[in-house]
Each structure stands twice: as structure tokens, then as C-alpha cells.
Length: 364
Image (cartoon, rainbow, N blue to C red; front, side, top):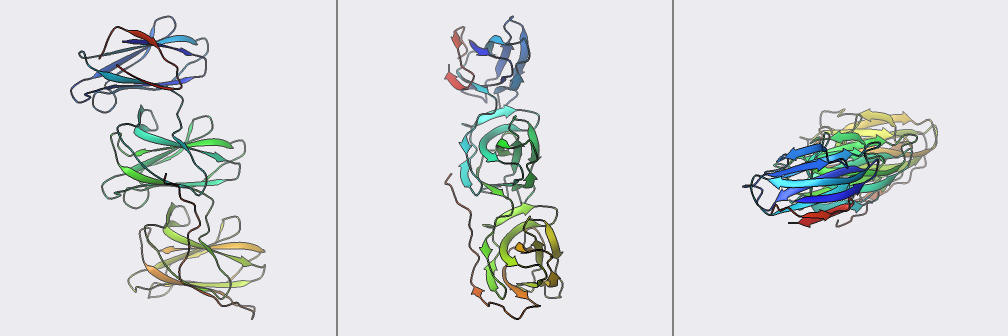
């Protein structure tokens, strides 16, 4: 079959041809320019017998009516889809967690930086934002996730494969620099082009705060797989965060004690900008991590990042915060840390027809 569509300069065209029986049939696509010349071809380069042309760019003086010639190894039914750019499946905001699934109904791209079945999420980012993204397969032992982050122009700026525990993918604290603000796109997929699985994707800005505490506080909580997972230069793994107000000259002491003697704790203290001030690994034989009389040099909100010494550590713990150079301390005791992010429960023929390259699917 032949299909025509109008394409102006600057368009990025993607075409996906899927036989109804992709196991026993192989698809072929030829893309013809306005002069009738073949400018791009694909033969069964997707999963099974699917054929895919991804993000073909219409350059200067190449605009006009293009033709898709769809064919195959024999006569068969098929589905042909035409896309412009990278279509957006859902728009989300910082703090969102979306549950979804990669299936054969998703788009299939064959591109240099991301390939296979995927879903896309758009979000607005401002200059100065620090973006963190997690994709967790429902079965992280047997499935592996991949993340690609695209800038407002659709260009890849950061990509990660399985970088968290098991098959989780974590992109942590990507900086939006000057002139880079706008709508960004997350491409969520499996590490293998044909991966199909349920997953959860979360989007954060900066270092989210789980709880605000005061000097003299004692907190009892637990690291679980429900916690955020970051992979960062100064702290990684499952963690919980505690914010507190401090004044310049305060001498701060923090102690993190695992309930099990077989576990080891890790503390990272961040200033109001999220920059590391101090960090300690286990400092005692029983796995405790202790920061002693750390003097802060400016007023503001400070953040304690509590975690295990190993990225995958999960255990119950007790956290204590003290001010050592002032007598006035408000003593409080808190049972568990509370999460503050919001959750979102997320046959070949000789016919010629006309398509519009926004996101069109036809069956034949």
C-alpha cells in the first residue's frame, strides 16, 4: 500500500509498520521524498517482523508531499503508524509517581539513544532545577529499566540503564542550566528493545524532604523499597531525609543507629542549597554513623540524608539530632518518617491514502 503526507522543513518523522502476525511475516517500508526518490528504508528492524523508521528529519528544500510504500514478504494484514517528533503519553509534575506498563500497544522506535517499546512523560523544568527520575520494574529481579531524558528540542541530554538496585534505573539530580528551561521528555523503556513489563516512574526536584524535625528530636523509622532510590556522587541507595533549621555557629551532632548489629548506617548532611556539608560512614563497631559537633556557617534549612552504607540496605533505625553549644533544646520523639510526594495512579494492497503526521494509525 501507499500512503502520502505533507511534511514541512524541520519535521521529524517516525513510521511504524506492524504485521498482524509479526512472527510469520516481515514488513518493509520505503519513504519517498516529493521527487519520488527513496530517502529512507527499513526491513523488519523492529521486534519480530515489524519495520520502523525513527525520527527522519525533513531538511531545507526537502519539504512537500512524502509517500510511504508499505510492503512485505507476502500478502498480510498490518498496522501502519505515523508520528511527528516524540509524542507525549502523559504530562506530569515534580512529586508525581505513575504506575504503568510497557506492552505491544506502545510505540516502537529504533533510535540511536533509545529503542524498543516505550512510554513518554513530559514535565516543565526551570533554570536551576535539579531533576531526579526513577523507573522501577514491578519485578526488578528479572526485568531491567532504562531512562532517556530529552531537552525541549527533543535532543537526548542524559540516559541511564539499570543503575539502581536490581533492574531499577535512577537518574539523579540533573541540573537545568541557563537557557535550558522548558518542557522536558522522559522516555521510559526496558533495557532490551523487546522488554514488556509493569513499572513505576517517579519524578523529583532537588532533594525532597520526608520530615521536618528540631534539635533534640529522636526519630524511629525504617528503610524499605518504598523509599526513594538515588544514585548520586555523595549518597546513593534507599534513603530518608530530615530537614531542620540551624543558625550560623550552631554545633550539630547527628547519630544514626541501625536496629540490627549486622547493618551499617550512612549520614550525609546537606546545606539549604542541597550541597554536601559533611558525610560519615559507620564510625563504630556496631554500625552506627555519627557526626559530632559539626559547626554550620550560615542560617537556613539543613537536610540530613539517612541511608545504609550499602545502596541496597534495608533496615529499621533510630536517628538523633542534637545541638551541642546551646542549652535550649526542644526534645521530641517521632515514630516514623512520613512521605510528602503526591501519587498519581498513573494486508498489503495497492491503495493510496493520505495521513497527517501528528500521531496517526491505520489498519490495513
